[in-house]
Image 1 (cartoon, one colour):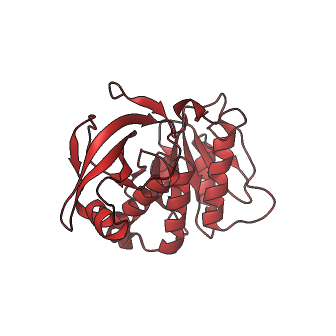
Image 2 (spheres, one colour; image 1 turned 135 degrees about the vertical axis):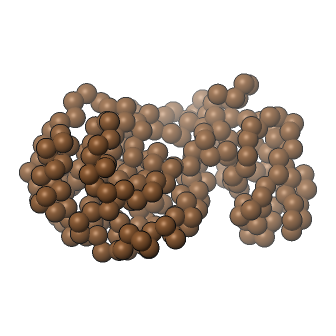
Image 3 (spheres, one colour; image 1 turned 180 degrees about the vertical axis):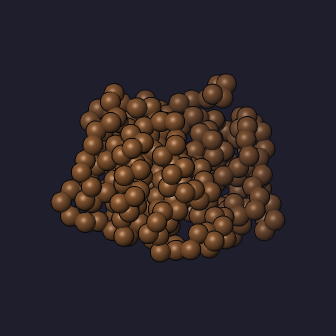
Amino acid sequence: MVRGARIGYRSGVKARFLARGPFTPGAIVGLDGDELHHAARVSRVREGEIVELIDGHGVAAEAVVRAVSRSVVELEIRDTIVTARESPLVIELAAAIIQPERFELVLQKSCELGVSRVTPVISARIDTKPERIPGKLERWRRILLEATKQSGRATVPELGEPEPFAALLARDCPRLLFDADAPETRTIGSAPGRVVVLVGPEGGWSEDELELARSRGCEIRRLGPRRLRAETAAIAGLVVVGTLWGDLREGGATDFSAGR
């Protein structure tokens, strides 16, 4: 935690930008790359404007714009806070690779729902060639950053490299797999501190994958009586997990009023 930092949430909507910390009150911080372009050319910040900076690792700061040009945006740190937007449950979404534009929706909404990491999964029935994915990772990281800023978070979820299905089952923590038809199992006992959530492609998991998941002690659940599209299943699955063990459950939401 940053010394002297306040914990909480500031009311009011301010433009938010990613910058390198640490954020020390009185220090001058500059933006670079895409964030510089966005501040100067898109948001068109002005000298004296109050904005919010995030470091991508959980710390946010209120800052005042001191200088703006096409090539420079400098801000003075006014007050550093540690945001209270992160779930107490560390969630890794392991989502099978689907059509890129639909996977981008999954990235955006999973960030809003509090995931810590998203890992694209290479499964038996994916309809996108895995070799196409490396060229999209930078764009996907940008989507996660923009979703982080929009949702009020200060921690940008990690985007993992694509991994085969079996590798996700080897994670040393509880794993929860959603499938439309497979018999349900219950293997997760008390509320976990970390969980891997597995969501399949449009064609669902193969029988071999389901059998492997059962043999590895993976909990299997359905998402109601209807068959969902892959992106809908990912969003619904995260809501279920957040309600069961995260900060969406009754009484589990953080009280932000103390930071106002």
